[in-house]
Length: 353
Image (cartoon, rainbow, N blue to C red):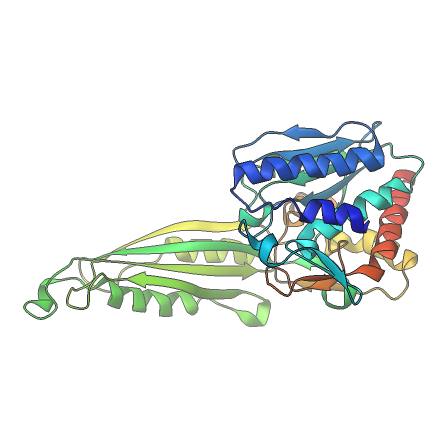
């Protein structure tokens, strides 16, 4: 498993870098074919190649992951793959190359792999726009999904996820000289300040809805009334009703200043993953690994899409570790074999249904 992990980590795969993702997809396909046999198909897309493998027979379970990472080319030189003091480190070890390796080795322990499909996408970190339809198609065909994103804190499984999305609010004003005739302008920055307060007031943390203005930009020079401004907002919700409320509220945003214009783009692209979607599979996981915990988390994954379809979905089956998207990212090596065994046990259960 360590050598396969090294193989994947040492082929850098930043999202949107098509050449790097093409090389990464070939590396993922090679690991799958070497360990499981058969042929892994590269499914071309505008975001890079997705990797699809089937064990044959009637589809019963989809092993779901992604091979794109958030780290730019050159990260590997600065932070090479290594194993030290029980931890593997390097770009993407935890999110989520380690999970892919565990999944493949868990399946390799099975004599019968019929009904098993693997789908490893190229664009999860940037919204899964090119892969969503394929993910949903294969999830519906299989009827059960195991997602190999990194484990929750302490090694727990992820039994629920918030829906998440990004909105961009653009404000158009009118420039003027800030000293000679400030009143002739329409100050987009002041309008943006009003909008930020309106937007932040949409949050309902008591029911899990967070609305966080996270990036803002306005203005050109210190002596010019700003003619334009933008505000980017991160949104997380736990229910479909809150998704609808938030999207309607953003669509209804109105300017406070005369002659200012407000335009909104974006949506909650990943629907909530309700904990009900994981109940049966999590119960099986607890029988296979007594004491393992389940946790609902705020981050989204491709499991949000499959659970929203009503397909049984269990997430967080990947690497035990931490530091996703950060330089201190790590994977706990000793946990890899037991997580691979958990994969095998879950697949056997699903095959037997």
